[in-house]
Length: 530
Image (cartoon, one colour):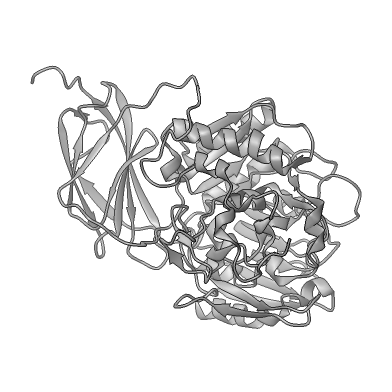
């Protein structure tokens, strides 16, 4: 069946995705019996009600992450627990799955029935669905997803396989008959459309969507729908996505060890807001893999320099002896990163365009992105199956422009690619080395407070007013509002015990970066007169 290159059919969304509704208050959509005590409610009452149509806020933060764990893989558990501790991910946001096949490839039906369906159902039962922007796989999961062989009737599809991270990002398009996730314009969050590309690499023409520029950063939120033109929309035809990555791969002869993965994740967490001073490299050579993106190397490098960052278009396969690599975009079938004596900075993002850069099973002779993880990369991306040398299947060079603008690694990556189904993204999607965290003070609450009844909070920023304030209690977002001076917290329905309250403030800037203040409080028995 033919796919419309310009407009994937929005009515192809399959019924199972209704298990995971991202609108607030949509928890518990599926009747699923789980041994989970329902969380107590914590009421946030706003002095002034607000409404905002089509507002975009940056995704990210530990409360917005669902971390999937293979419950029958001890290594998967350990790495997930380490990452959750590094990032402050609430325990309720870890979903442990069983029955995951112990192999590198699963079918699309298995992805939905054994992974996404159970995960979304659990999030619904925990009343967390409305706050999830990121779905992150720990180790111990398959990396490839197979689908109908009919997909190969399209000239741009070589193999009926995709990656588990790319397919999860496109979760609303996983129709097994019509395969809309194959569209070159499947990712509307990209902010533009592919208008022309003759195979394999003779021409690329991308156009901006409406008032947006696909070369400019745009914050992500899973509750935002995107229309066919790449604009945020509340239209019924809008498509939603979930930022997705895998922490690492430990299965396979050339995979990473658990220690290497943990070390890379630790470096990534330390890189946040540090603005590392290094160089973003684009490699240009006569290799077909490099030619795909030659069209934008110079412009992307110029934009980075205009933002105050160092960038270089390197003539050759790969630079050597570079001590401060902030990121690298390559196109090579074979390379030796460690042997070249290059040093990645904390937060570095690495990407290589080749056929099997993330194919950890089987023999194919190409270099794997595990080399970047071994060297301490915060994120690395490669193909799990033959993608052909097509721009829409790989990030554009504006990947680094988005990243250096302050977007999280996950946001920058998916903002830069039109059709991510072939590519596996490894690493920490929350890493934000170049973001500027909002500075603010909260009055009315202190760490260690013993409280009951109503608690009045006030938020004051160093500059301007907050674009949004959200309150999380024990990991669950319980209320949000726009730029107001005061907020009233009611604790009467919260169990008498110690609780963690997080005030999350989003700045009124292009990136919508979040700042956080955390308080441990003890709620007294509200039923006792005082």
